[in-house]
Amino acid sequence: MILGDSMYSIKMRASKNGKHISGAERIVEKEKIEEVVRDLTKRALNHENGTPDFINIKVEKIVGEIKYIDHLPIITIPCKNIKEARKKATEILINEGIPKEIILQAFEIIDRGGMRGAALLNLKGERLDPDKERGVRVKNIDVSESLKNEILTKNLGTERTVDAIAIASKVIHLGVLAELCTSDNKNYTTGYVATKKGYFRITNLKREGDPGGRVFFIKDDSNIKKLIEKLENEPYIIK
Ligand code: PML
Image (cartoon, rainbow, N blue to C red; front, side, top):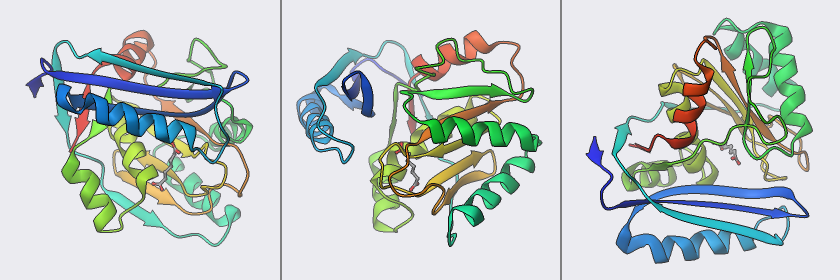
């Protein structure tokens, strides 16, 4: 743990006609702000889902502690097609005690797409996110330079994995039972299921051209406000 004294959070989100196109999060030292703002602007402008008509980049000094936590182990499960991929994802989620009908409900949510953040679902199938159009966006996160290099040089995943492992590791650390995710990049078909056992990348979890989304499965919903507050605001660097 270190104090976030000289560290800044940078958040980017881009949309077109009010529809979410892309988003990204970084935590950097003051000296890196300019470079990262440039990178994120480029990323927003060159997204495969289209050219945005609105880009918001917010830079904020982090007040208080940044927590450093280990990333979830990354395991890739190659699947031939969406049927096999969803069966595999369902098995992993059932092993965490999530009922099959709730898993189907989660697939319906991610297949509908269009949300900026994640849907929060308890094990009775109730939505816990206060704004159901928007969902809850996990913010104030980044990965260490060494984790990023490890993922990319050892072919453990892609640039998409680098962003997603930060989200998944933070949410599982904060007590979310499991996460199901497909990319909102239209042609990126590898998705994942995250649990305390690992970050399971599953190929062909959606079809090319389909929308994507995220669902967090919540077992204990007794303090949901506090959980959402932490998901959004507690700063984490994943190493
Ligand atoms: C996203 O685009 O935000 C989701 C990315 C899924 C990444 C899956 C992988 O590790 O390849």
